[in-house]
Structures are given as structure tokens and as C-alpha cells.
Image 1 (tube, each protein chain N blue to C red):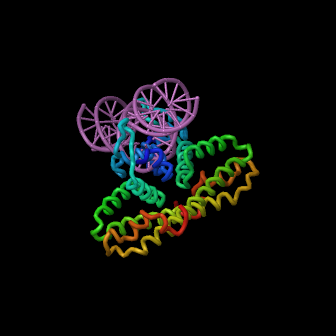
Image 2 (cartoon, rainbow over the protein chains, first blue to last red):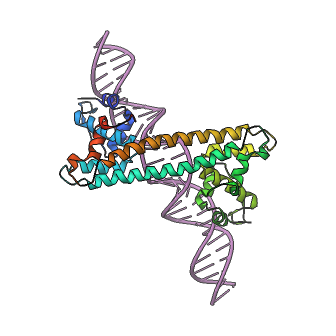
Image 3 (cartoon, chains in turn orange, blue, green, yellow):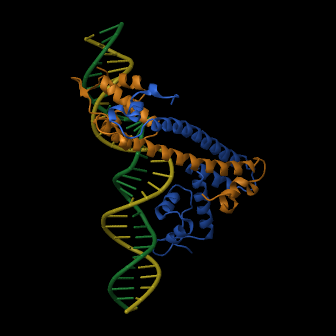
Length: 138
Length: 138
DNA sequence: TTAGATATCTCCAGAGACTATAGGTTTGGA
DNA sequence: TCCAAACCTATAGTCTCTGGAGATATCTAA
């Protein structure tokens, strides 16, 4: 039986975060010691590693909750799990596209400024004041 | 003189968001009508457009506050404004890099799954359970 | 002028995913 | 047996809004 601190060390998930996941229903409420402290088993370790991994990949809590629910019906078809992952992939790709546009715009703005003239002439400030100086819509 | 609703329509910033910006000190407290409603002038319109543009570029409130403070000293050199924009550009680039790694990992996971077999064999679920199936560290 | 519709006011709560603090209790090792 | 470390609960804070409740102001049409 592992304490919450042991579980934390083994998974790299902070102690308050573990309690938070329990509260959010991602982890089942743990057994308790006589003194009311949480005690975990290997199963919980695996579950928490699953959650951690999914969070690292950027899945949000509700998607993870759904994946966990699915994984508890091992004989059903996995179309939904696939869909969740594919949707997330799409949202990651969308985010990348948006950030690339921002990157271009910012790079353009920064490249016009050598940091060495007066604020009133600064391209950074002027760009922000005047959307017309932009290359693209955003 | 513009009401808060007029200002909102002209800038595309929602009414509660305008009040929020005032509260955060990005917009000066507006003049009030006899009945205590906010009344704005062209100056405020420009300021709000500046804020909106900076937010669209992903700058956070404190960076915007700093840029506004700088823009009020038009004769000082603009090194700080340049630095704020350049720092932000770097953080955008870092974010893009991270998301690209995620994208690769997710694409790999999704590509192994046709959504058409049992959960117990699903590569999506298995990948999340077993970090060892990953290509890279994350 | 007055009624009614729309806009505005303040204050408060919620979103998401934690993180931190305070004040108290349990555990484990010397 | 004692003490430090780890644990417990409950609550508030992070960031940038967004939405609601209930009250007041403003505008338009009759």
C-alpha cells in the first residue's frame, strides 16, 4: 500500500493534484488508513500514470474522464476513443496554425524595431495602435 | 460621447470585458453620465483598439499595461517595448515547438487505430497506459 | 407625457487545472 | 516516547474573461 506521497514520487504528479483528480472523479476515492490517510495500490498507480500521460498530451479532464469510462468496457468497439484522440489532434493542429500566424506577425513587428529610437517612432507601439500596419487578419 | 455599448460594437470587445479592462487598469476610469453610466471619447476608442490588438497577438495583461505606460513617455527610447515584443515572440515559438511534438505523438497514436476493434486492443488506450510505446520524451 | 423596451449599473460566481496556505492530525523512525 | 515529516480538510488564489441577478437609466414611439 502506497501513501499519497509515494504515489506522487512514482508518477511525478504533485500531491494536491492527486487529491484534485480524486475530487474531479478521475481517480476512485482511495481506501483510508486507520488515521484517515489515503492508501493506494498498483491499480491506482497505473490509473494515475494513464491520466498523467493523457494530460501531458494536452487532453482535458473531461476527455480523460471519457477515455477512462471507455476503458472499463474492454469489449466494446474503440471508435469513441479514436474520435477523442483524433479531435484532439485536430485542435492541436489548429492551435499550431494560429500560433504560426502570430509568430509571423510578431516577427515582422520586432524586425522593424532595433530598440534604439524614441517610443513615439517605435514600430512595436505603432503596430499595436494601427491594425492597418498588419499583414494579415487576426 | 460613446456609451459602453457603442464602444463595444466599434471594437468588438464585449461590454463586461471593457469593464474588466478598466478594473485591471488598462483603461482609465471613464467619465460618467448623470445617471452614472460610462461615457467614452475617441481617445478611449483608440486605447481599447490597442489593447484588443495586443491581446489578439497573445500579449498578457501585464505586458499590455507595461506597453501603455511606455507609450506615455514618447521621447524615451523604445528598448523595453522591443524587449516585450521579442520575449513574447520567443514564447510563441516555444509553444509552437511543444505543440509540434505533441502533434507528432498524437498523429502516431491515431494512425495506429482504425476505430474498429475492441477497446482492450485499442492503440489509443494502450498508448496512454504505456508510456513505453511513445517515440519521444514528454 | 408616459409606457415599455433596451441598455446600463454593481456585485458575485464560474470556467479550467491546478497551486498554495492555514491549522490541525497521523505516521514512522531514533 | 518524542519529534519531524507527511498527511488531513477547507478555503482562496491564479488568469482572462463571461454570464447572471436585481436594480437603475436612457431612449423611442404613441
